[in-house]
Amino acid sequence: MTYEFDAVIVGGGGAGLYAALEASKSSKTAVVSKLYPMRSHTGAAQGGIGAALGNVDDDKPEWHAFDTVKGGDYLVDQEAARILAEEAVQAVYDLENRGLPFSRTPEGRIDQRRFGGHTSNFGEKAVKRSCYAADRTGHMILQTLYQQCIKNEVRFYDEFQVVDVIMDGDTCHGIIAFELATGELHVFKAKAVLFATGGFGRMFKVTSNAHANTGDGPAILARAGIPLEDMEFYQFHPTGIRGMGILITEGVRGEGGILRNSNGERFMEKYAPTLLDLAPRDMVSRAIMTEVLEGRGIRGDGRIDDHVYLDATHLGRETVELKIPDIQDFCKTYLAVDPAEQPMPVQPTAHYAMGGIPTDLNGRVVTASGVCNGLYAAGECACVSVHGANRLGTNSLVDLIVYGRRSGRHIAEFVKSTDSPKVPSGADERARSHVERIRANRGKNGAHPGELYARMQATMMTNVGVYRDAGEMQQAIRDLQRLREEFATITPQDDTTNFNAEVLGLLELENLIDLSIITAASALNRTESRGAHSRRDYPDRLDDEWLKHTMAHLGDDGSVSIDYKPVDTSIWKPQPRVY
Ligand SMILES: Cc1cc2nc3c(=O)[nH]c(=O)nc-3n(C[C@H](O)[C@H](O)[C@H](O)COP(=O)(O)OP(=O)(O)OC[C@H]3O[C@@H](n4cnc5c(N)ncnc54)[C@H](O)[C@@H]3O)c2cc1C
Image (cartoon, rainbow, N blue to C red; front, side, top):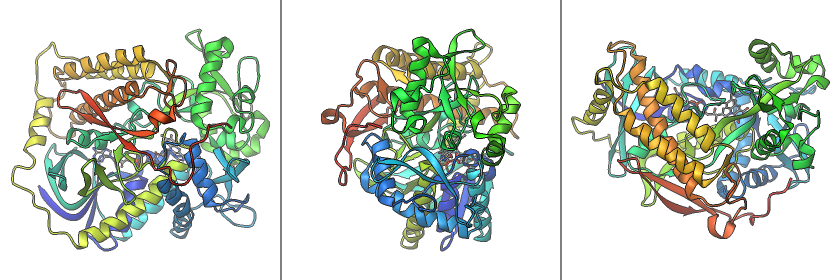
């Protein structure tokens, strides 16, 4: 089938739905999503959304912007961070007005709690900035936005997986999507396309990310010649459930939870004397790894010391049940541990992509030759860049809301003055032959997809994880290039047409392998340590040489070439990062 809309939004998470809501006010808008929107990963966000409302402590957007820049180890584009912090306040009130049931202070205002790296008066002391709805903030955002989109008559195409983009030079005319139910490929013509396909934590073995977080948007655009920005910066959240990676929100430490090693010591006193357990995530993850590597970790099933404890027992049962009910549930279900009575075993888990599709302040995709017409990106798959080298907790939901909204507004204006898309017949040919190539039966000796997936995750976890060095990253690139070749020999098991999830899974694996290669190559190239990118062989931050964004181009043969883009440091001069 062929469809035509003014705006097509790829992805029904927080960023996609907010953009769709704004675009649909004055244009014919569709959301094309491989999941039912309510199942998007945004729904898993527990901790909250940062905004300087000042409801509990004194606060200002300027302080929020500064924390964002400092937390991002000065790789943040500062005007983008200023807009993020300023527009966050109204965006949160808009969500409230649209019906989001925030947790409340006794006076009835939106309640706020502490999160890592958020301070008042430029680092003076911790501030309560995270607005939250118990530990179900993301779920409530999705519910609120989805209802509003239905009201605005947005058309939803659920379980349609986008596999290609229709570009003519640097102008986008639409996308091609595979329908799970029928196995058909559909052409969606559009004056404007926005990618809001979320993160790609599945490239790592231990991750907090959902199975669908496979980076389809960035991979599709990388293969279409768009460079990806700052892909070496991948955040490990310090507190995943040991072995499983399921997230224990930073909100637990925000409520007063404490990290302890095998001697029962509050080890963060050594690493971040002021912010302690609520230092930025990259620092806390490294502190946990260092405790474990130096023999103060706690013994796991494999009889190796591999984790530490997150202790919330002193908070009391009432606080645990009221403020972090879902966490209590996860721990009881997966660990048979009740956090009100026993400490939780935790280790760092791959969590968030700071890098992605490069955009300007209105969500338009930008390359070295300028803005792409009609092509937008927002949310975790995009890089505007407000997170720099390390994202602060609660700043992703803000990014979705602020930049999702800005992109949607820009699209609404852009489509008014743009002609109908010109899509040549046969625009779906490339996607069709791509899918057919993947589905081809190559006999018995083909590689097994599950085995390739596991090898990709293992090499990324071991060689491009919390700590990195040149030898390990070179090994990862060799492993990944081999996987890319072996991928071409895969023999699918399922040759049915309807509901063939295997084909879609293979497309996702292919995307993850390409993004892993770009991540490893970008990381090997950056010979310094900054934020989440921490190299044993180059332990220092080197501003003279490396205060610049990486722009990585993927070649047809899987090679990666790298350019750079300057960082906007127009407001604050880079300082050493001490907490
Ligand atoms: C467990 C967890 C807890 C978190 N907690 C917080 C928190 O408390 N505060 C905070 O600020 N951040 C938090 N984060 C981060 C934040 O939730 C995510 O970065 C954010 O929700 C991503 O939103 P998104 O709209 O970009 O993408 P998502 O919500 O992941 O949605 C992606 C959408 O894209 C669609 N899609 C993907 N590929 C395709 C394709 N090929 N074709 C069609 N559709 C496609 C999917 O169907 C989905 O609808 C958390 C993340 C995790 C994993």
